[in-house]
Length: 388
Image (cartoon, rainbow, N blue to C red; front, side, top):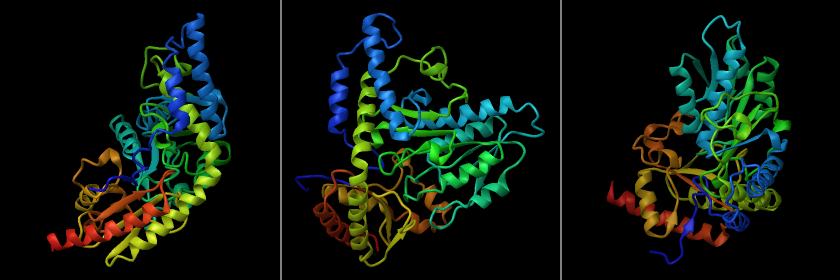
C-alpha cells in the first residue's frame, strides 16, 4: 500500500479547509443558543449571521434569503417539496393534478423529494437528456402545463460534471409563471454562481462539498417566496426550518464559502488543466471511454469506463494502492445497480458497471495525476486478467 494516499473523490466530500477548521474551532466556545436574547445568545447569533452573509456572498443573494439546513439532502427536500407544496396551495385554479418537471439524472436527494411529491398526488415529467447530459430549454417549454408548479434541474451533474443551461431553463419557467430550483451542490466552490443572473427561485448548496464541515448546508429562497417547512416546531430560519442552529458547523461553513470565493479564480483553471491531463492519460488505456462531455463541465470531474473491468473491483484495487476514487454518487455507493445517471444518458448497462468517477480538488497535484494514471493502468490490467 502507498504511504501517502491520493484523494480523487472530491465530489463525494472534501477535506476540511484551514479557514473552516479555524472558524469551527473558535465557535465551539460560543455555546449560547442563537435564539436567546441575552448576551450569550446574541454572541452565538452574531456567529450565525456572519456565516449567513458569507454564504449569501458566494451565491450572489441577500443574507435573509439563506436558510441553514443539515446538508444538501435536506436542502433539496426542503426546496423541492416545500416550494411545490406552497405553489400548489397558492394555485387555487388548478384543473388537474399539480405537475413538476425534472430530469432522470438528478441527485438521489432531488429524486427522493420528487418521489415523495408523486406519492402525494403530483405528476412528474422527466425531460430528455442528451448523451452528454445536456437539457434543451425547448424540451422544457414543450413539457410545461397549466398545472406545472415547479421545475428542478441541477446546475452541475454529480457524476459526469455537465453544467446545465440553468439561466435559459429558468427563463422558460419564469415566463410561464413556474418556480425554478437548482441543485447547486456540485457547482458551488467549483464555478462562479450568481443566483440573480441565473434567474432561479431557489438553490441548494452543501458545506462539505466545498471544504467545510459535514452536517450543514443552505438553500437560497428568493425573497417573498414561502417554502413549506419539513422540520416544524421552532421559529428558527425565518420559520422555515425549526431546530437550534448548529453554530460551530455554520461558522465553518461560512468561512469555507468565503475562502472558496477568494480561491475560485485560481483554482478553477488549475484543476481543469489537471483533470484534462489525467483524462488524456486514462483514455490512452486500451478500452477506456469517457462518459459525459469534454467541454462544459465543472473543472474537477471526469467519468471513465474501462472495458472488461468492473468498476467496484477497480475502486478496490486502487484503494489498496492508496488511491481514493468512486463508481458514482456517494449516496448510492452501497447499491449494486448501475448508475441511473449513466443509464439515462444512454450508456449500456455493461459499460455503466465499468465506470469510475475521478473528482479532483484543491490539493490535487500534477504528480498525483501521473501516479493515478499509472496505477489505473496496472489495476485495470489485473482486474481484466482475473475476470476474463
